[in-house]
Length: 448
Image (tube, rainbow, N blue to C red; front, side):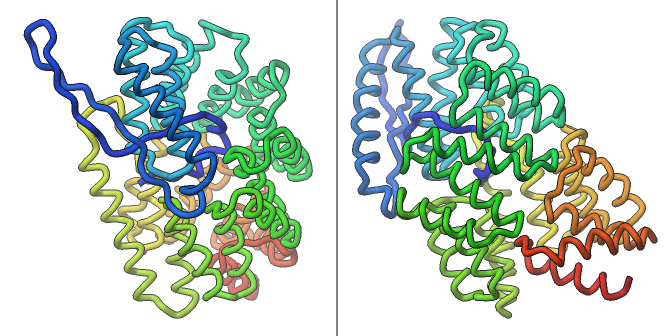
């Protein structure tokens, strides 16, 4: 079900998992069940890589240590880290969240102030979109060790998701002063991006790429996001170059394939774009790939396939929510995803329900406000759309999708000059925005 577009944020952790083996044993005259989570089988090029073999060996060694020594907290943390990284690589977040949380909680049961366990639990909570609890755990961890750069990075993530951008910038500055590396440069890049500084964002993400080892998942994640920054600012040639380099360094990297798919769509090569996204979707369970594939099928005149994908997404998310273990530790908030899926399906009332639920949890986040504004726009409640749009633009973001939506909302609220200026600027640049939105902008601009 999960994303993981999260987060330019949750970068570099070393993790691995899948399936489960149940072992029974007697202790204190009671039968306890211990569950071990083996690694899920990777697919594509990464399945045969040296990295995969290294991860398998590391996993086997850690499981052996955990099974034989109930007091080995170091191996439990390392196992949680391995699971977390494997979730990023494979997209099996629900499974790996459960696996990692098991070992993190075992450590915290013995030591409630264990720093690494607190930071991992905070990270897992953010991954589940439980942002308030994730932030609270990160703040608790910071109190234990205020000089650790990684915990300040998690604080950046939590503050961003809850819309406290001033606090996020402060934590990023501290993180940079403690450890300028791929993780800190990536967060700086994103903060610059959401404040409208694309040249600064590109500069910081270049530093992130240079700080990483070519081929590592974290490095290629940063390289692809650098490509996306070029894509967003209209430099499609540089964007393509970085996606191709990423695929050379890490063959079969799903996010790089998706980047090439977006560029093919921008050139109206829809069959080629669908092929890229199909390959990416087979390699990584990522919601955004499926959403973009639905758009592509519709643009290619295959609406039945587009509708089928959206219906499967709705059912899949609903099924995942029902099937999640009844444990408050792994409850995942899927309202943001459901709002977007229902929007695509034309279910605007359901989209509003989930957008409001997400808004009630984090009313200051600009993306949440943008989603809510766009739902109201599609419901033709333009006055309400304007309220949330203005909240979405409080950081002066220059994201072209946001600005394009802003132009459309301004037009429907009689702010013709603002609408004309924004839509004209967006359409006169080469920035790559979704084709359906671009078509709406062209049609609206012709009426102004």
